Image 1 (cartoon, rainbow, N blue to C red):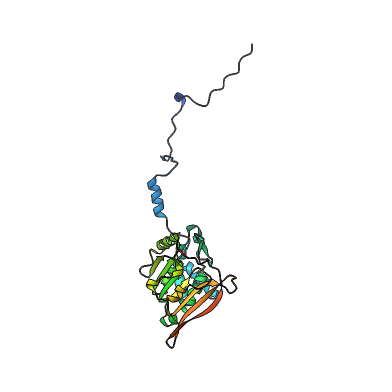
Image 2 (cartoon, helix red, strand yellow):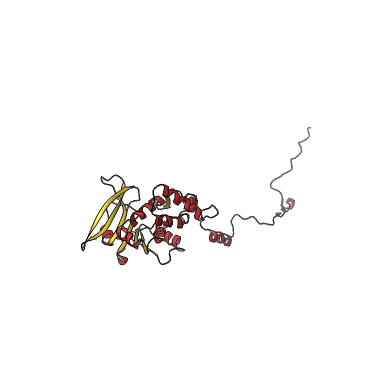
Length: 276
């Protein structure tokens, strides 16, 4: 009769009396699948615009301005304003490293922050208007399409007051947060339909739009002060693409009329009615 094979000790499950107590962690920490709520709250409180990447320095903005100057932007007032406003604070953290490239960046809801070169060009065109030339500043400005608030911040460096309208509530709220530390009394944000302008504070010496439609809304012309200038993207003749359109409210011999001219091709989001 053959001998039976030796039994293999049972390894699992062990009886309770066979289990050894776990050794404490050398670091004395308790591992948790989730952090305490107060730690998460502290992390959220520490969230801020990126720093330590050179984005906070005046030098990185100055390099952007030098590139724009080489590409043809020539108004020193506009260049200085672009050099002063920290564009990286107006874009999402993940895109901040691209903030000082001459590119548009998404800000959510199908909208973008315009290229610095386009912002500079449109404001430069405003400065070429008769009233702005005489004053040396943009006066009271109406901006159609606040977006993230970047252009409003630049305009505030160059005008007496900026009234900025945004039809998307989420972007209106985002701009209010972005501008909270810098707007003071110079920037007034309005949640409303940009096609209607903002009659209570009219007339405006300068009007600039960040969205393009088929033609200039009548309300914008009605709210443009004598000697004022409007710059907006509109459908190009023939309906192919968009161009920048400049409208001057000219007063001659006691009579006022509007003079319209067409500038270079651009590409902006569509101008829409209503609020969301």
